[in-house]
Image 1 (cartoon, rainbow over the protein chains, first blue to last red):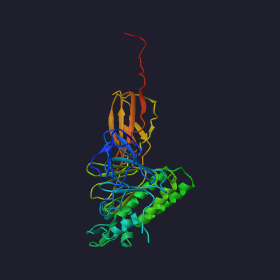
Image 2: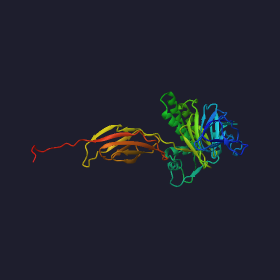
Image 3: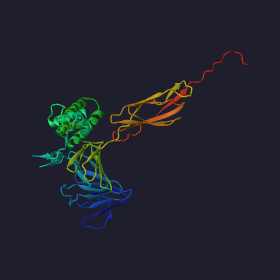
Image 4: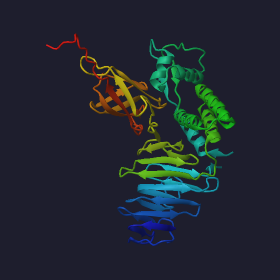
Length: 113
Length: 296
């Protein structure tokens, strides 16, 4: 969910080609993109208990299903710019963030079987 | 069987461990200094890794070198030592200290994953409870280079090129395209000026040039500092460097001076400046000596 924001924040849906103005408490879905303009910020809340605050001039994609081969699905991709992430309870919350060069995981330990 | 992401990364990398061939006249300590950046300690690791009984190795011997798990263990040890140093004294800190020593012994025995685990446990013993939120920052440049800064709570894990790097609060990792994560050296803590005490008035008898005798500045040493930068302003300004936590100022004219110091880490990162300190050099008044009682 796009919880709150300041300044110019736009959203593009997976199925759409156009960017449109974001609205507070707007639901976000897989492969949606969120963009902040200069001097804008946006707070995105995830269902897993984590919160991400986007700084200005940032672009993120939500839970991309078209992931990079060999790389698991992540909660969001930071395409450019800066985000500050917070997990209130690391024992139960988790967040995974992909970037062009790395994957960052926080919270519950990832266990493979 | 269950694996953590970290274990998987280490298993993947074990298949291609680096090696070095001993050249004529080379000692194990020299090889360790060159390849690991640590002569004596590194030689211990190489002995353990290669099953050697002594530091004597014949030229032409192929020695195994540590893989990326050594860097991970170093990072975990650094975070653990820092957390233990900052912790308040008590049984928890003592247990953590013991665990750090165990981690260091495991490290010297080239048992890096176990050293990482022991260091992690030491860190967890003295770090704030699990209720503290985990906060971190991710910054992606136009080039795609990613910086991750862990700010509080549990460490986060950064994965790239098959290497998983833990990032503890206060640490920063950078990932360039096609490369594994690399720890960015954090800025050292700001030093604290000790002597002369701020606000001191220091009387002196000026020499023939009217200047003070030499004056020593002292400040508290900073663990991560390779050197210090001192800034002095007043009737004479100065910017100098020192490798110890003291510096002898040359003779100076009387007047009010202000000084501050920055610690500089091994990679050149600088601390914030210390709190500004001041002192005043006061020339003793001249004594007039009149010979005889009659003016002519």
